[in-house]
Length: 262
Ligand SMILES: [Zn+2]
View 1 (cartoon, helix red, strand yellow):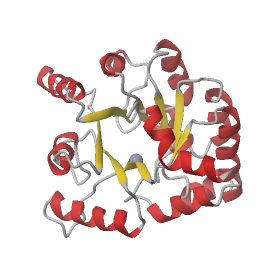
View 2 (tube, rainbow, N blue to C red):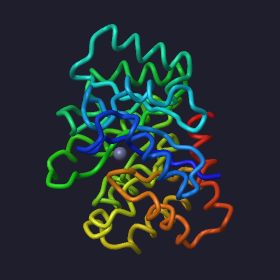
View 3 (cartoon, protein in one colour):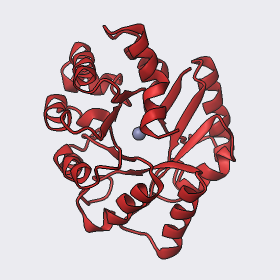
View 4 (tube, protein in one colour):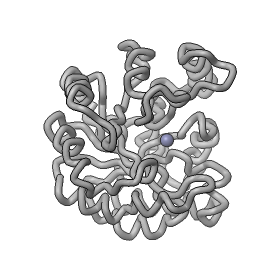
């Protein structure tokens, strides 16, 4: 079984609504023999990357898709919080995502507290987008994993997922997070050529994943960051690791299911 634990639903300029993008996404999953996928919503409403509300509507209880909700903690009202809580309670959301740096806030910002408390109450993980962005290295200061370590220690019952391994500073991310048991990693964007080039090459990427598995054997889950990145490249990345077939199989689905309590 293959589960992509991290992808997005984006409209192209030619697509007038998300149903066309969704149809395209299903085609990619079928081509790559991916059984299930997690759609990570964007925290900006009504953009070209699907927001939490539209993600919920488009997946419409399909058992092929999971949704991770993304509250915009800088622009959120009580009815939004109620929406997030209701959909955690009825299990329509399997987790929550924060992107410090997309907006200027740190994981330790008091405005994030409600996110962590909801995650603890409903026993779901919190995902953090980490690292630099194309053309924007400044944003990484907001999602430095040192803050995620602080939060993970403060909420030991909550699992935290680091997306993009704080690229390009892979070693730094490994050093400070590999000793924290409730921090997990997805492989999203790690097979992207820009990420590979800026992070020290493909061998460096593979090494850090293998080192992470040695430190915490069940902590890595397959994610692609489709459609910013190419899903098949990420499958090839896992297939090309010098690890047992069992460990590869765990990365492709079981580690995700365990981390998310599914
Ligand atoms: Zn992403």
